Length: 177
Image (cartoon, rainbow, N blue to C red; front, side, top):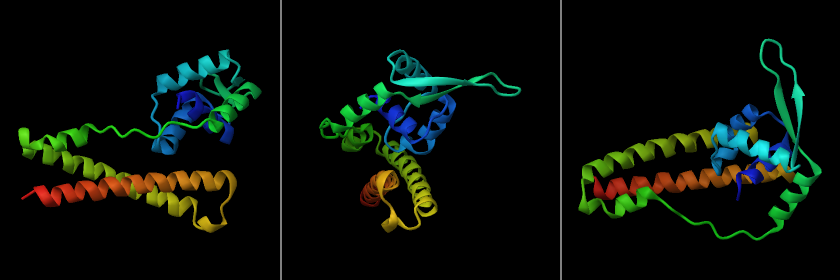
């Protein structure tokens, strides 16, 4: 997936400025795709040049004008084509897993400290995702369309965090003696 596709999905849900898109990435799309502020702005400029998005200038009081982006017809076509293409299976890459495998050849105590730090991050993220799920989707059985899609992606994020918490907890329980 390219950043362009993540931006097209977000803008299909709701037009927004570069800053608003960055906040969306921090709160939702960041479950599965990371992007810096600079990457988002560079990509939006390229997408605008390619005709995938259009931008309207919005005047602001006491602040510089902002550009609000929306998906253009060419962007709708590009997104639909990309969604229809079969994607490759996800590839798991984890520096942490390599460190865990090599713990016997280095400073195990330092590795265990790192595992504890990762566990705390994943536990916090899991709690946050579960709160979002309860707050935003109190009746998942009633969902359909885009709301169901968003809910199921959030559930995927929850399940990934449950995996990390479970695996790191097991690693600590079995090696931290």
